[in-house]
Image (cartoon, rainbow, N blue to C red; front, side, top):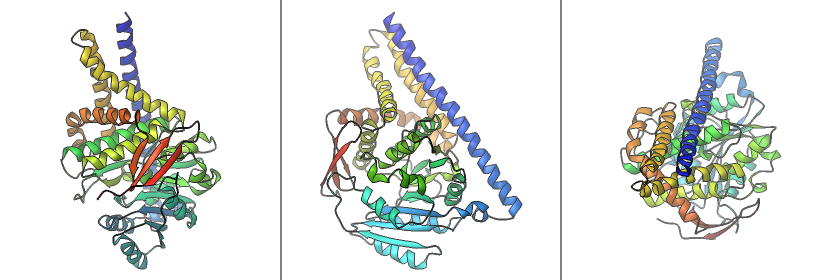
Length: 420
């Protein structure tokens, strides 16, 4: 009886999560469709492109922090020059670069049709500080925009990226918004997520979209647990009233902490956008070691998050996944336990089908499912297992030590030789 009750509870949890995510995603898709129709009507009435909508009164600043990105920076800058809405300023912050990327940024600034500032940082990050935080602060301090947009040098932004975010923030209740990020291989130059067929790049494509589904669902339910900082926008007023990043608990995932802080302040709302017109393309990690370090940092941000609901949702998912191996090992003696991995497979497959609905490359995404789901379970459980015994993550050439506290999470950064 006890075993039967556990199996029933497990099945209800897995199916319940999928149903909740399906309902929430459907709502987000309806909202995205409404916004698209509104933009099309405005274009038709005004005989104008998105750049000419009356919402242009909201000034926009785009902030990009980078380090040694000479191979990819030009691609991002080119996508910014192709924006349908050119009414924005761009702030580029170079961090201790040893390549030509600062020169590429300065040359672009001299030719761009919109204002561009290029800042350089030569200082090592202070002890106990996330190495990206001083760069973000440096960039934000020189902005004049009412809306702050963030992306990374290894990304490409869609044509209406600035215009859509400007439109979103016409609602004064929106304090922060974020959109999906799809993965492409470094050689890909077409649509997001379309590049390459290697197992690692296919898995990263799957993983990014699965993470986004979870983040969008929890955000729409009223408790944002994270998102992608390279496709994020925050109202400058909201950011400054929160006291900036320096007033928030330290974390390896500073964007998730900011989302949680905005969501906890009932004056503002956090929006997750499923509109594929807002989907950014980022470059896949080419080496398994590099990807695993990234996954470990993301896992640390969720596992040790200062926000209780973020910790709970992540640990619940890990508990569901960990029971798969236990059940499989005992299923020969207790055959009904095979229901546990079946329930997890059902949840992950269903979540993948939901996610593919708002991907610009949904069909190619679905082809990845049979290969990537087992890899997904292995990666998530292994990173969580490592965090049970270590408090170190490597990022941006630094080894960051996590020391969990009550609300503030203390980090100690020590210089580590950057892997070539």
